[in-house]
Length: 272
Ligand code: KIV
Image (cartoon, rainbow, N blue to C red; front, side, top):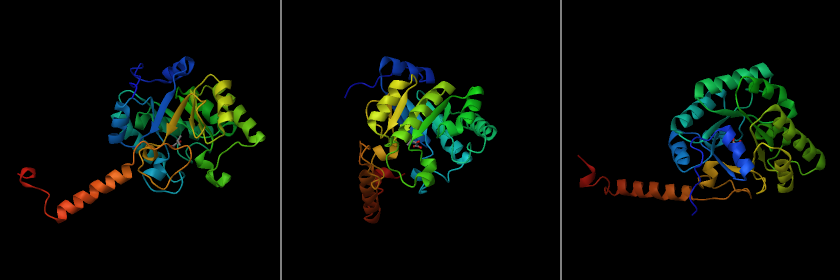
């Protein structure tokens, strides 16, 4: 395995832009708790996203909509306590920024103050540009999120690939340029055709980090629990599994249960 590049002592929004300039791909994963964030950071990841996918992965909700601002802050502050090197991006949850730009700014400030995160991410383009601009003027770095935006699931109706039609693809490209112009430091592009993702990445100077957007973008992001194989039921084409942790944990727990039942655990050396 090639060594993990750790050129950047602490990854910042500027380092990500330098990586794009140099053609070095950006690695990003989600984390929602101290223990896993510590492992992921120590392994050399560039960016940790405290995603609102915590709503699904940590709390078992069907969508990302129910998670609250305080719950996101709880997850983010646990991650921040673990991280030494990665840039921590915190998702703004549904309902915390869509109302108006003043509400958006006060939610973003609350996240930054109470979690210690380094930046925030929100979903959408022209519809929320005023909020993005207001947050940026307060000195808070913003990552955009275009393509499949799970907070709008009830508008789309499905989690299928977005922007296959020309009209939606054009809107997406113009939104990406708008986010760059406004001053976002990067954009997540979720589940869009790889040809469109390539065009977006080539049209703007800020990094485009893809999930289900092919290989011609500036970096990749996955949900940690998916790539570790902790959730068996979720099998989209874009997901590469690096472990089958669900099987590993099941077998460890079964062994423990058997050892307790058979009175094998604890043995003489495992007691006082
Ligand atoms: O919440 C999340 O995990 C995300 C990723 C899918 C990019 O937004």
